[in-house]
Image (cartoon, rainbow, N blue to C red; front, side, top):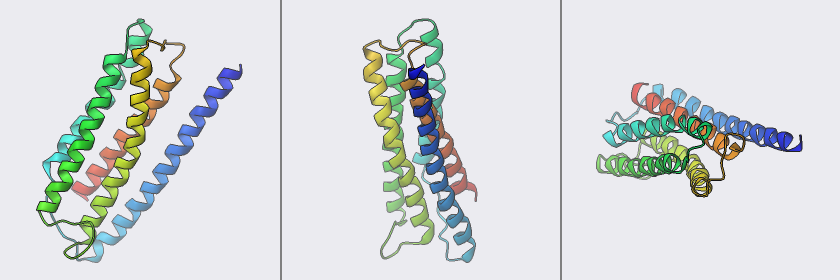
Length: 183
């Protein structure tokens, strides 16, 4: 009984944390939507690295859906979770590559030559990456523990919490990607 209460508390804390993150990005999105029509908005092509990173995070999120099935069959989830971790690191790599391409295009965060559109892009993507680092840490932990085969279908709270958070980050990224590309 006490373990169930503790698990429920951990799940609630995750949802509260994700709610806070969602409110943070809602504020940034609101500022983005209000500022863009005011003019002096630099139009530029979003580097293809952001599209590649979008595909990567979608694939990583899909892979996490197979973890519980493997646990139900008493199979190891190490390779699957490790693959998601590697994809998450790849996502981060392509984000950095995208920023480098933006700089090469003359799109800057601040300083001479910067523009509100570029600044918003950097802030939105960097803020997402900062939150993604938390997901990478959780994935690294779950990978380490899954290598030890400690997870079962009855004992997989860390996997559940990590998966929910990672799916949240993937959906958040999709929202940001479409906002930046199509609004």
